[in-house]
Image (cartoon, rainbow, N blue to C red):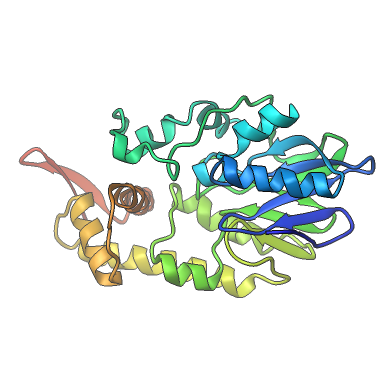
Length: 295
């Protein structure tokens, strides 16, 4: 996975999770996300050293394990500062929070304490919010892109926008079926915002860098709207969140093949229910000690 140069100061390290390097005029580098584990970060560091680049800072777009898994290794090897948004910082420093949140706040059992849901902890040295910033001598513009996570951010530098998981490419959207999101109204706002940010390249965390993403944004929006309509229609009768999850997965021919996937899909279903509830389209009731959702 060699570094791909997009512009004079921007490299992309492509893989299952795309990583970025933004160069300063002095040859220092800011890394955007660090991959799933130490092995990915080690390869990234080797490629950076081959280009005589010194990694001075890491920016995490959000705190999911495939974005922060190499933090600990890179920070220990380079002394790099780590930056992320205020809402994501506690999860970067205390990764147990992620599987615990998915498990409804309970201590997560060992099967969901895996590298796909829980990275090694790393030390956040600075919290960043939207606006123009200078990080390790690099001028960037930070955008709030919540929805996939509560505090996700994107970074724009030298005409290249690193979007995190703010959208999925059309091919990946079809593959995954139910895109993971925790806050649907903010997710829809983020899709709108992405369409209004002018840049030369968009670099999603999953998929290929692209010049234009309008079709991808439209398909992401359409997928969410389809799921909302299905769930709302099914709620002509009272159903629990897990009833709805089973119906949605069956309808989309998705197999929740492990507990991690089950919890990820269930979280998204809960986000859909919250959105419909906030829109006044559905309500809740307790029946025989079960929380049910209905029109």
